[in-house]
Length: 354
Image (cartoon, rainbow, N blue to C red; front, side):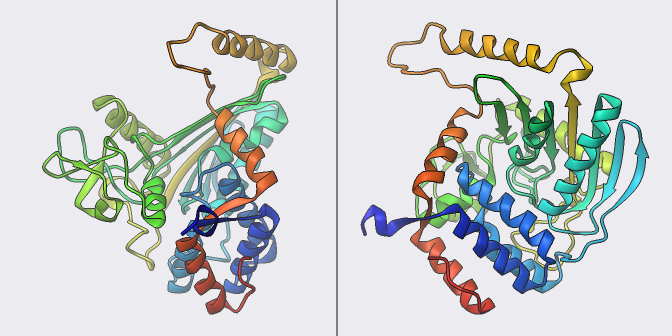
């Protein structure tokens, strides 16, 4: 099989249109389908291929089985000038978190910063999509979430009671691309494991171990082990804290209450998330701040490098480069994923992705 056959490219507009058509056929309202489709396509555009269109068959299963509410009545439960708590009514995470981000930005304009917590949400794709939303308003964005399945035990244990619990922070610059940190509290997000399995690739050592502590590199055997935290016990502690802030604080699922949405299509996941917007103008001139960020970026990028290191990268630069490349060349879709999407298209009676 040639590389072209293995991973043909599709334009982002076509990808977005396919996702929107599928969601509409499943019964999602047009506006919500457009919101979710744009964010899912954006995930693939920036190279977050474990969180983009690869999830569409799973979302379809869950919506048909009743595990996902396509017509949620999203509402604010608690509210003060600098915060809010939202109930997503088991709606699609992309739609719920878009509403949360919009509210956080609006409140930050008045209060200087705002924290919006969410419960009764669902998987929403890569964390960076939401941390980046405040950027266009000269704001800093932060995002926290409880993952949708537990893949991490407490440090020293073998019972998976924590998830990948991602963190994202987006900080604007003026001359340079924004600094966007998007990381799981595990060495690899589970979406990357799923993407490896979809492509028939092996995982590098250090992503997962089995319950005897041996390296696990076959993603098809992921159920036999668990993900490793970043930085050893520090990553375990970070996963716990993120889960408390995004889950427990919002009365969302955490620990034993987390529903594995890879195995259970019928139960509401009660996913917890949080987004923070910080208005830079509350601290001073936004352009002056962005100039200071640029100067720091220049210092970091121009610093002395170790032998055989060609470039020092800043968080988010490689995603920006992939976004540019995929915008021009199209988004790569592996043959195995295309087969799954063709089957979904035929089942939903919509045009195949081509």
